[in-house]
Length: 392
Ligand SMILES: *Cc1c(COP(=O)(O)O)cnc(C)c1O
Image 1 (spheres, rainbow, N blue to C red):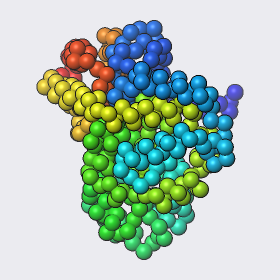
Image 2: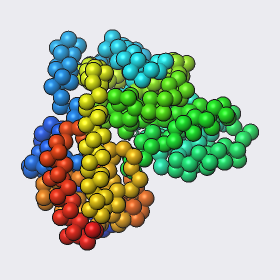
Image 3: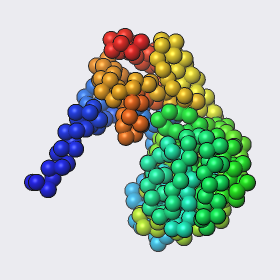
C-alpha cells in the first residue's frame, strides 16, 4: 500500500498536532439538548440558531409535502425538477428580503460555487476578504478569475487593491462573508457598497450566518444595513437559522435570470427535495409572523457573552450570537472541549486550517432554543474547565 503511505503520515501528523477531526454521532433531533455518542449533552455546536430544525410546524410542512409530492425532485431544475414549491420559495425569499428576485440552490456551498463561476472568468478579477468562507474561495478558484485578497473587513485595503489593479481587468466582483462564522464579526457592507458603486463593480455578500439572525426579524445583512436593492447578490443558506438545508441567491433580477441559465449546480445537480422546500417555506412563515425567536437568540447571546467576559475569558471580536472563546493553541482547545464534554457540554474546538495557527478556540453557538437554565449550566462548565486548565 505504498501509494497510500503519505495519507497515513498526514493523518498521524493531524493527530499529533491536535488537528484530527474526531467526529461525534448524534442519535437525537437537533435542539438545546442532544444525544451524542450515547450521552445526553447540552448543545453549543449547531447552527440551528432559532431552534427550527425540529420545530413541529416545520416537521408538519415537510410531512405534508411528502404526502403530496413524494421525497425526491426527480431531476435538475432546468429539465424536470422545478416544482411549484421551488418557485413559491424563491418568490417568498425575495419578498422576505425585499429583493427583486431569488434563485435556490442545493446548499449555500453550491450557491457560492455556481454564482461566482457564472459571473467572472479568465480575464476578470475578484476582490475577496482574506477570511472568506471556503465555499467562496472554491468558487473563486473554479471561476479562473484572478483572486485579489484584501485585509479582513477593511474598506481602505479594498479601495487600495482596486486602485492598484485598475485597468487590468474586464469585469470585477467584490465578495465578502456577511457574518464571519469563526469570529462572529460583521462585514462593513455599507462601506463595501460605497466602494463597489464608485468603481461600478458587482457586490456579493454571503449571509449564511446572518440569515435569520441579522436585520429586522432575521431578514439578513442587507436589511441590517438598510441596503435593499443596492447589493447585487446576497447569498443565503437554509441550513443554519432556517434549520433545513439548501442555498439561495437573492438580489438583482438580471443576475438571478442569468444564474438560471448559467449556474452550474442549478443545471447539473438535482433540485432540492419537496419536503426541504416546504420546510423552508414554513420557516419564512414563522419568521414573518413574529420576531420572538430572533429576539430570544440575541438576548441569549448577549447574556452568555457577558457572563464569559466577566469570568475573564477572551471572547474575541464577535458582534453576533456566535461566541468564540479564544484559547490559542489547538491542543489546549481540544483538551478544553473534552473537559466540557466530560461535564455534559458539547462545544467544539476549532483549529487550523479553519482558523489561523495560534488562534484555536472553542466556538459556542447560541440558540433561541436554549433556556436561561441551559445557559447557566453551560457557564458553570466553562468556569470549571477554565480554572482547571489555567485559562482564567
Ligand atoms: C455554512 C456556510 C456556507 C455553506 O452553507 P451550506 O448551506 O451549509 O452549504 C457558505 N458560506 C458561509 C459563510 C457559511 O458559513
